[in-house]
Length: 153
Image 1 (cartoon, rainbow, N blue to C red):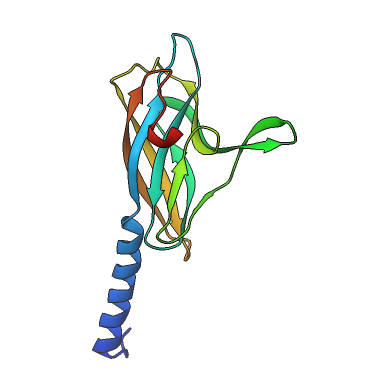
Image 2 (image 1 turned 135 degrees about the vertical axis):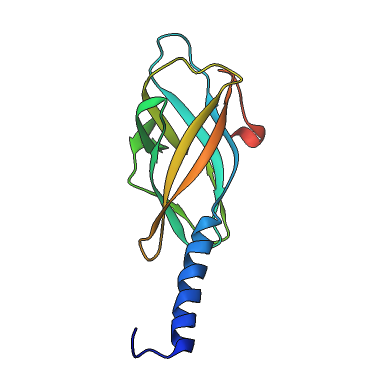
């Protein structure tokens, strides 16, 4: 950088700032976690995600769970199957729904019962096209066992 012109340095700094600012703008709406019954050790977390640039959710964690994973449910023949996925793509400008019956977050080895009215902290790890990672903090309210979000998600 010693021999670099000041305008080039400013341009590089602006590009770096823009790239991280775009990633920081991943918006999470309508997050929620399903309540559990006593001794239940798993639950699901659901939400809508929107990124202004192409990105991917590549990880998730929560202090209420021993393990958290990204999952997808899909029909395979006549059966609904659930499996862990490495990432969930967030195409630029599109809303991606994490809901029952599709992509979602699974919380395993719960450390406590999740009761309606509580809030569950989640950390989403989002990666941009340049493989830069950022954490997005989410506070998801716990909804009743029979809760169905508007639009069925």
